[in-house]
Length: 298
Ligand SMILES: NC(=O)c1ccc[n+]([C@@H]2O[C@H](COP(=O)([O-])OP(=O)(O)OC[C@H]3O[C@@H](n4cnc5c(N)ncnc54)[C@H](O)[C@@H]3O)[C@@H](O)[C@H]2O)c1
Image (cartoon, rainbow, N blue to C red; front, side, top):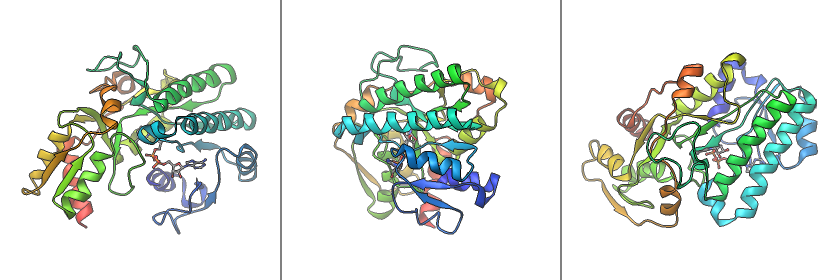
């Protein structure tokens, strides 16, 4: 939803068609065209691409890490088949560009925990991570073999005040703000010291658009780029929120998401993205917390 609005600002409202299985998001209504579509329905997807003369596709549909563990078969099927559908259509219809996000979930317990590099041991232990890792290599394959200009970022946990969390392991870092304002209390699904890489949504949107607008010769990675902005633990974000809401209390009840979080790196080395197309974040934990609380209070 937020990416759609950002793309409409660049390309014009009528030139960006939003799509989802669900009904149109309230915040999108009246801002441009919307098509209700199941991305698994290859024929319908292909018809839409031809009929509407699409030149680029941003494929964001997926089942995320925590939800994926509850239904591994469905997560694998959706995350893989949707990508293959789009890649095949991109190849046949000679689309100009395709965007598909990967995730830090490609990394696993054997990857370096600190400054996890672009190229390293990658042995994911969640079905979501396996699907993203396989997807990265399909992207690379379609680029090498068929010249599809597909670009990808390994997003860390994304934090936004506009969109509800989507079933990821980092959902706590979104829910905490609403609960802090409304209840002055939050029960966290991860342990207090669990450090994870995170990014504020305006940075994620800007990273996506900057990658997609970069000249082709600047793109050296056709699997997926590491990108990072900040890393923090539940204890650290709670302390930051307490600066604005002094009587805020955090409780910890780690659940199945703790094991997923512990399998991931604590922070990411994104020097290749910085070097290739000039990535630089704007928001750290303090700036994000201030902006989140100000906007949620509005
Ligand atoms: N949110 C994060 O922290 C994060 C981190 C890393 C990577 N990512 C990736 O970014 C992308 C977007 O994530 P998000 O947080 O917006 O997820 P989300 O769950 O909020 O949104 C996914 C959307 O896909 C739609 N969808 C599901 N099945 C569909 C189908 N068959 N056809 C059409 N639409 C379908 C859902 O209705 C939903 O609106 C995903 O690929 C995700 O893996 C997200």
